[in-house]
Every structure is written in C-alpha cells, then in structure tokens.
Length: 416
Image 1 (cartoon, rainbow, N blue to C red):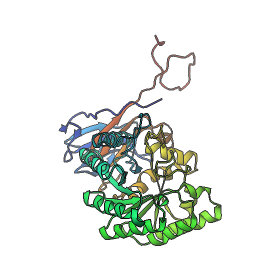
Image 2 (cartoon, rainbow, N blue to C red):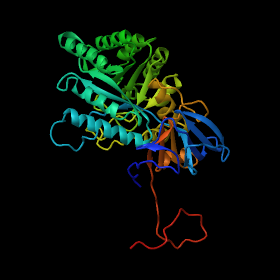
Image 3 (cartoon, rainbow, N blue to C red):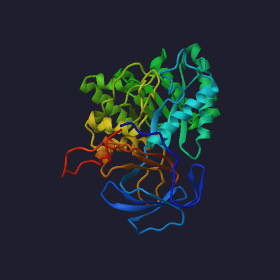
Image 4 (tube, rainbow, N blue to C red):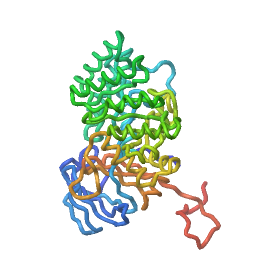
C-alpha cells in the first residue's frame, strides 16, 4: 500500500513553531521500542538526547509525542542524491536548468527524502558546461531554505579537468568551492585522462581540506588500483560510488581491488535501488565482498524519478531492504549501511539512542527491524531534537467469514 504524503507534525503540548518544537524545547518520546526489545521514554533537548529511561519514568516540561507501537532508530542519511535533476522523468523536452526550477526540484526532492527519514543528504551537482555555476547556486539556495529541517551538502562535479578543455573545468571547480560546495568530486571515467582527473580533484581537495566524492563504475581494476593508491591517507576522506562494475569482474580480481580500497580507507557508496545519470552501466557493487575485505560500505538512493531511474523512491529503508533481501545482509547490517555508515561517510557524528548523542531519530511503526524494513509505512522523523516530518498510513479490510483467528484489523462493514 503506498504511503501518504508526509504531514505536519503535531504533539500534545508545549511550545512549537510553524514546523514543530523549537530547537531549545524539551521533547519527550513516550513508549518507544528499541532494537534490543526494551520499551523506553526518550527525552530530547538542545538538539541532543538528554535521557533514556523505562517507559513512564521520565518527565518533561515541553511537548510529548506518543510513539508506542514504533521502533526508534538512528535517523538514516542520504549519501548519494541528485537533487538538481530529481523529479524530471516525465518532463517534455530538454532538462531545464532555470535557477528557480532547479531550486524547486532540489527542495522538493530533499523534503521527500526527509519524509522517508533522511535528516542529512549529500547532493551531487554538475558545474560547467551549459549550467555553469547556476545549478550549484540554486541547490545552495535550497540548502538555506531547508535549514532546521534537514542538512543538505553539495558535491561539485565538473565534466573535464585535464588538457586544454580541463582548464575551464578546474577554474569552475575552484569557484564552486568558494561559493559553498563542501565536497569536490566528479566522474573521472568521462575524462580523456581519468588518472589526471583524480589527481586534480585530490590536489584541490587537499588544498581546501575538503572531502572527495567520485562517481565511477569501477570496471577497470588497474585504474581503480591507481585511484586507491592516490587516495590513501587523504583527510577528511574519499568516497567512491556506485562501483557497480566491481560486481562484473572475476571474483579474484574484485577481491584484490577490495583489498586496495580497504587499505586506502576509501568508502564505497552502493546504489541498490538503481543507478544514476553519472554512470551509464547498471548493477550494484559486490557489497558482501567489499565488507569482507574491510571496506566501509554505505548505501544511497541515486536517481529520484529522473531519466536514470524514472521510479526511484529515494527511500533509505528501501535501500536497506534490498541489501537484506537481495544481497544477504542481516537487517542490522543493512540498516547500518543507510544510517551509521552513511553518516560516517558524510563526516557526521555517530547517533545512538543513548544519552548524549545527537537527536537525529526515526520512529517506524513496528517492533522488529526485519518487519520495519519489510513494511515501513508510518514514520516520525526527528531532526535536532524536534519532529520535522510525519507520515501515517492506515490499512483496513472489509469483514471476512474467518473467526477465531488473530487476523489484522478489519473494517466494520462492507465497502459501499
């Protein structure tokens, strides 16, 4: 059953602004179930978790939200979005890069993903060519409009960085960093000199202290090995994705490449829901092989209803579901890929449902993680200690002849 659109949050009492509780207000989540089976109250304040206690044991002077029947989890993060092109699959004609249109798409896409639970997102934005820096400026404006609801960071992606043509791309990348792009990246596979492209990105990143996030299919093991060797030791870190080509390599070749990525400390972001426009080939990275080698593997959404994936949902829980159902990960490991590992890939602090940790939380109706990944309909999203999105779904059945069975809730009468 499809979910309803996220609804404005509400609570029983306490001061609130247009979108819920203020950052400084105390919020009490009552009756939450944790993954270890406990039922607890969780008090939030100042953007952090103040206390976790047995149900009914905590008091708060602010608002209270009843989350009984919900599993409380660290909020997911989205490490691989394309907000500038999102929601364009059904558009006629060439893609519009009008600044207002790009801002609208990026904002709407971020809100859709926030409704799914992602309180932090990294959006990849092309710079240069037709759009110049206009698309980046529009996404940065979207970031400002989302302040207090979600954290949106941007990756500047030039097309070419080597040769005569690359001089303009390199200048554009430098300007993008000055404008506010917090990550440098791109698609080295599209440059005539992929190694030179990576060298240019890593040099600029080192100069400005920026993270690096590169698109690559990773189908060329020699090229991937050179990239890993160059990336080793760079701080604050290098992320690669979606690396679907690794899954098409012979097992022993892919295993050597995985060892090289692990030694270099590179994070891989796979896209189990589909590809993205920056990489032509489809397929998901060999998640279990990479994890066995010690590579940190996060999962992202990739395309959100654009030409690369017209039905992309942008749902982190669907990505976790696919990692569990298709790639054999335990539900706990699958969810970590879209939450704790994804947050680490974005350079964000760890979240646990414990006192002292950031109040970035997702409550999903259900009592076990496996069931939540299977039927994640109703959700409550908490960012910086306040409820910022709520999605509710109700399923009803008409009466049946079955009696004496513990069946799901049924309607009171026949449909008219």
